[in-house]
Structures are given as C-alpha cells and as structure tokens.
Image 1 (cartoon, rainbow, N blue to C red):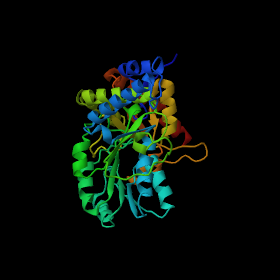
Image 2 (image 1 turned 180 degrees about the horizontal axis):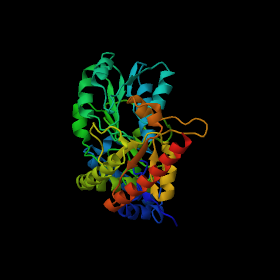
Image 3 (image 1 turned 45 degrees about the horizontal axis):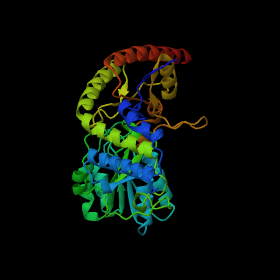
Image 4 (image 1 turned 120 degrees about the vertical axis):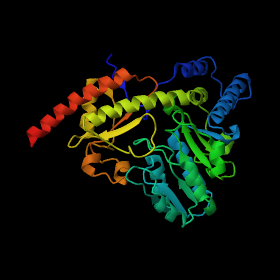
Length: 385
C-alpha cells in the first residue's frame, strides 16, 4: 500500500503505541458503562477519574477543572454558547484568526443579540495590541484568543492578553488545541493571569479522535449544550467514551513528559525545511512572529495551493492547503486575509506541520520533490502565458 510521508500533524497525529496499549482493554474486556453501579461500571469510572487526573497534571490544573467533551469544536462551543446562555448579551471579542469552531458560534451569538468584535492581527499574524486595547474599552463579557494558530503556527501571549482584560471583568478563553505537546501549558499560571478556560484535544497530541477537554475555572457559570444524565458535573451529558478518554489521559501525560525534547527536534527540522523553502523562492508566512516549532506555511507566486497539494500527494508527501475549498467556491484562508495577504497569494498557501515521526531525511526528500514539482508547474504557467 502506498504510504506518503505524513507532514500534516496539525490536522491530526498518529496514535502513539503506548496510547493504543492503554486503550485496548477498554475496547475489549472492559466495556462497562461508567454510570453503572456494579464492578464493570466502577472500573470504568475509576479509569475516567485517572484520565482526568492525567490531563489535569499535564497542564497543571486541578482534576475538577477538567470537563471531557467529544472534541475541540465541542469544547469551544461549550464555552462560548454555555457562558453566553448564562448572562445577558453584551460584547464578545474573538480574534480574526480563530478556528471556525470559534468564529461560527460567535456568528450564531451575534444573531441572538451579542455584539461580536473581531480582534485584528498584524501582518505577521500576532494580535494587534492597539486594536485589542480599543476593544477592551467596550468591556467584553467574553473573549477568546487561540494560543497557537493551526495554519500559521503563530503563538499569542495569552497571559499578557488575559491580564490586560482583567479589569473588564469578562471571561477569557483560549483554544490551546495546537499547543498541547508542542508548548508547555500551565493552567494555574494562566488562570492567575486571567485565563478562565482552555480547550485541549487528544488527537492533536498522539491520542485518539473523539476525546477533548474544556479546562474550566469553576467560577465560570455555563449552561450545558447537551442536557441529560448530568455527566461531567452536569456540563456535558452523555455516556462517556471510556476508551478515548483513557487514551487522552495517556497521551496528555506523554505530551507533558516529551514536550521539551520533541519541540527542540521539531525546531531543528523546521529550520532545515524553511531554509530549503527560502532557497526555492517560497514566501513563508508569519516568519516575524513567534511560532510553533513544527509549522511552516508558504506559497509560491502563480501556483495554486490545491494543485500543489495534489501533486505533492502523488509524489509521496501528505501536506495541507491553506484554502477552504468547495468545488464551486474556493476561498483563500481567512487567517491570511486577516494578515493582509493578497488573495492571489493566499490561494497558493500550503502548510507543512511536522511531527514526532518525521526525519531530516524526509525533509531533504520533500524539498527535492517540491523543487521538481514547482519547476513543472511554473513551466506550465509560462507556457499558458
């Protein structure tokens, strides 16, 4: 079976063998419902409790602050919609480069009377501090700014942003899905700075799909999105996905143990990759900003990103396009648009996101394949002109 080199870890990561081993008993012999009162149920409840402790320890939170959800999108929706439902409409401030699972619920809240303030970024993708200071004058009741961007890898100074918002008295949330395992995360320190909620997801950190968490300051009142049996302190009803939660706990523990070593290795490969990209004449986005150690986002003039992704896939490299495409309406990345990148450049955007299994040899092979592919596409463009 053809197996391209995998360079798309911001989309999802492979399951770590240790995580799979931890999950297997809960997919086979240990099948109890954690709400059951018998021995099978008690074992499942204990497994969830242990996983909750592991996730909490990985980000220096208390286990009672961890609310399990089915994914990062649900956790983000739970915070925004849940908090909004517990108060009168006011100002909701979200950065212009958030994931759609923040931007779209914010748009839904706008239709319910909330005033949504889009926080501008500069040309490097960092939050525009003057615009942010102006937004804070409106005393937003809810603020959401992601820790690290899924496209550019740009890291925001969440502690400083939250501290600046403290006087306004609103709740501050950060989507930290891309940060887990790539950056040290300390919810206790962030909470002291003014962060009230943090979103995490297992499958971005070598854990399973189907498990995530909202790490939540217990002073924040939320209305649940899903009502029912009162699971997760009444904030997320539904029979728990025990295998995935167990896997999340294991993955979170491993992520915290390995973050320093993995980040250093990824940073070295990123430098090698970007030296090769620069040598080929690529425009690399957000190089002026502090970024994740694994993420490189680039484009070549007059080359369509989707076309390049398809060619690279056939050449043996799985990468991502920066366009949100449908067959009828290909749109350039909203992140790049917010950074002021011209649409004709943004449509060419391609993202490489490295992971634990990648090697420097793969980087060399990728640069060689990219050079050949770009050369052919540029030749076709020249003929067309």
